Amino acid sequence: NAGVTQTPKFRVLKTGQSMTLLCAQDMNHEYMYWYRQDPGMGLRLIHYSVGEGTTAKGEVPDGYNVSRLKKQNFLLGLESAAPSQTSVYFCASSYSGLAVNEQFFGPGTRLTVL
Amino acid sequence: QKEVEQDPGPLSVPEGAIVSLNCTYSNSAFQYFMWYRQYSRKGPELLMYTYSSGNKEDGRFTAQVDKSSKYISLFIRDSQPSDSATYLCAMKRSAGANSKLTFGKGITLSVRP
Image (cartoon, rainbow over all chains, first blue to last red; front, side, top):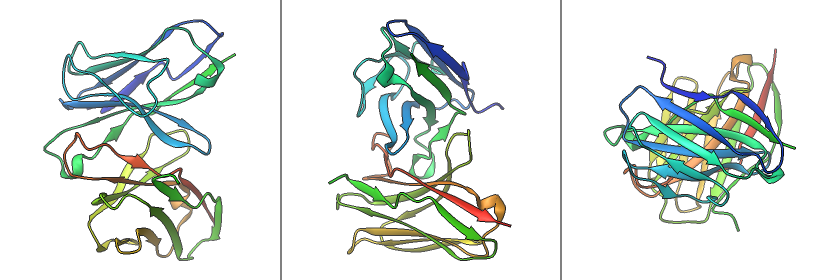
């Protein structure tokens, strides 16, 4: 049982390049989330999904797109990377049957945009 | 004013000290209060949660909520070097997964041997 995994762990992009971050969970969780964590800003929700085929915007969605084609996977895309998107990205998943819907986090992806 | 404010730190204490970590919030609709612990270069993990006001104890950790003051605390007794991590408070309006978590910025704690 791997929990929540994220690919890649590190990435360096040039401004304008695109990339996709992959999140996978093997806990059969319905809910999945993408956050970014910046110094002095805490964790901020980018997009989330309440089930396969659904997505919704969070607090800071601009410049990102997401897709949830399979229940176990949640993809975060950057179409044209900007230096302001340099951050650590965390994926999390949750299940409605859990107390307070505890969110389980992945290990993070460190992205630098030059 | 941000919805959740957390002391920025960092905080450094000697081993065995009692640690007090605090958050204040402005949204009276928050009902569920959580503390996440995040080790360096890892994802956050849920440490404790409480519902509404009151205290909750788990080993060396005690979570306290004062809704009248919109103030929550996490106390760590007999702190250990293994407690060195970033602690994030988080809050939500209801237990449902559709209720989003609002996080504090986190405070980094270092416990010196």
